[in-house]
Length: 69
Image (cartoon, rainbow, N blue to C red):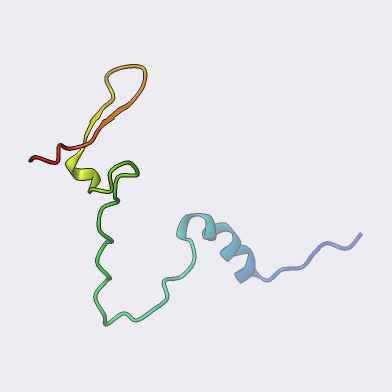
């Protein structure tokens, strides 16, 4: 039975890939793009940063902000 032959480089790359990941690609002289804006609430459409999230009980409660504020 023939043993599969791989070069030393292929074996070395296969060992390191789980830790290093794929090589970085792209323009290196440009700044990184800004992070996208925060997500909107699926109930009222306002920013999630304006909401109160209560995780103290067995079920998580989401409190939308008042419109009067």
